[in-house]
Length: 130
Image (cartoon, rainbow, N blue to C red; front, side, top):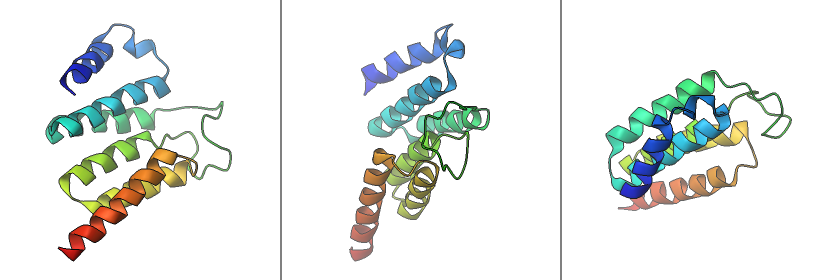
């Protein structure tokens, strides 16, 4: 993950990052969150997940990246998926389930959220059995 982290940090620090569409910025930031989670650096992951939520509040995507019938228009599910991954790494499975469900409320077809929700339920059940 270290090389990927350095590449993503270079992307964020590049002068043209701010000119990218917010959807691309969210993708880069969420990949950075995931990379820090994989590296075991939850504190740094939290810094960047906060940025995804800050960016998400300013998001305006009228051209419909996500399906119509969206219960929360003009909001991305990406920050919820990223924060859910942090909760999973910490063993906070109830919080992870909540965030993955929120991501699915926003985009019911978000397969990554479905997969992570399934994983969170399984890990929560496994933790309860121990």
